Image (cartoon, rainbow over all chains, first blue to last red; front, side, top):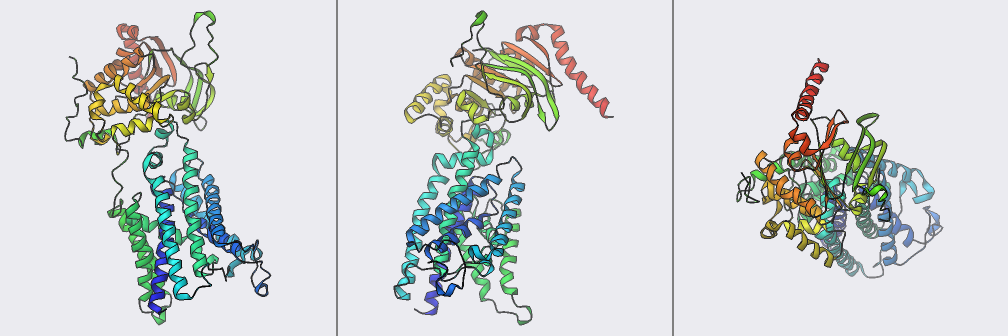
Amino acid sequence: MTGIEFYVVVLLVYLGTDLLAAWGLNLEYGISGVANLAYIVVIAAGAYTYAILSLGPDSGNGGFQLYVVGWQLPFAVAVIAAAAVGALVGVIIGVTGLKRIRQDYQGMVMLVISLMAVTVVGADTGFLNGQAGLSLIPNPFSSLSPAVGDWAYVAMVALACVIGFFVMRRFTGGPMGRALRAMRDDEHAVAAMGFSVIRLRLMSQAVGGAFGGVSGALLAAFIGGWSPGAWAYVETLALLTAIIVGGMGNDMGVSLGTFVIAVLLLQAVQFLPQISSHTGLTEALGWIILGVLTITFLWVRPQGIFKERRPFYRSPGETERSAPGDSATGRVAAPRA
Amino acid sequence: MPTSSDSGGRETPALAVQNLVAGYGDFAVVDGVSLEVPVGKVVAVAGPNGAGKSTLLKAMLGIARVMSGKVLLDGQDVTSAPLEKLARLGVGYVPQLDDVFDSLKVLENLEMGGYLCNRVERQRRIERVLQVFPQLQAKLHRYAETLSGGERKMTAIARVLMLDPKILVLDEPTASLTPELSRVVLEEQVRPLSAMGTSVLLVEQKAVAALAIADWAYLLVRGRVEVSAPAAEVLSDPNMREIFLGRAAAEVAARSVDAE
């Protein structure tokens, strides 16, 4: 396998796992209105879950890394478990957002959770090997030759994306999508129709968490390693930028945004020449561009490249103005003088 | 409900509020309000700005904090019950704004309203709602955002009727409508509901228009019920009118003096 071929494989796996993650976060943020700034935590939960379930006991390999569990489970079982743990962690994070506070404060609470989780996992060396993280995480196709195995992995990630896409559509479209979007726009209006807002919110975060869990598991199995450095809070912001640029709440837009931001942009900056007097500047530039893009879009085109089909709620005053076919009074019933 | 307390020949009201004190933090905006909505009647709660109408409504619907007092639905204590539970128990709440889903067709709006029931029952209810509002038949496949103000309100009420509510709670249904259209909505959309046996609680700032279609009126001033009387009586009695309109004006005047 040539270098460029391997690079393409890496990009495709990144794209697939980022798509799953972006769809999950879009379900929570774009569709349901939960500003989950701790989303990377569910991805990490999936990655670690996959790692410790698929790795053997930590006494192996001379015991150079310490972790819990180590059951050496088959790939599929470990990935499904990663989805379940992602969903569970998603719900736990979600519970912190149930208090009736403004959405931006909920976002702050979740940001703090994200920071805390990295610190705790990094500090406890016996749990998930602390700052050093886990390595030698098994790849399901390691017995195949690299040329076949890598493309097989791409095919598997693609399959996961196809399944993920249909699962996602069940929640972003149809009656469930309507209910979630309605909840985002006005909690009381959906509650008045008998929907439980708490249940809807937690369900959305459970499904979003499962997406993140699978994304993390597939990424960890491909890279073979996972450490606190892989899930800093800024990773959530990268996904968030992809969603904002692509078009919040729009499945197509989010997918495009993920491709442009998470793959094209963050890869492109790595090809910039290193400046020897300022090492690390080119990498930092990726984040700087990300931040500028987020701000620019929020100012200039908050609906993103592809906007959500149409506004869900609008005040009646606006509606009357935008109804060209009818006069303001309409033909409801002729007023009786 | 098993509690058909016909003691004394008086029917249990569809909705009753007893000595309700409610507000935000420690501040009571609603200060000991009692009211009743008899079955099949239209009851209007009117009052000037800041009288506590919205807070009263929110407290009844489990949104604002209830400090003391009770809310009874069909005799059953539902104080502080969450809105979705009230919806299941038969409270149809039509919010003031954000009352229909703009991005959905009228039919889809009705289907959303019928979320709680199965497909067959939902279809049956859609047909029944269309008997109440035949004008919607022609608009079923229009997006709600293209409706006129009156059609929009009709869709909002129709959507809530999909719940087959025992009582309809309307928060200023005429808030964004012209005076002429307000009258039409109240007379032709709200009033007929009581003829079908649905009880209606109408919270309105446009007092005269609301009282014209109501059976009973409560006038709320400074978080207290100032007047409780048959609506027609309030409307026709020059003193009552004076009390209401005068008090309301006096309130505003007093407050602006306080502020200085």
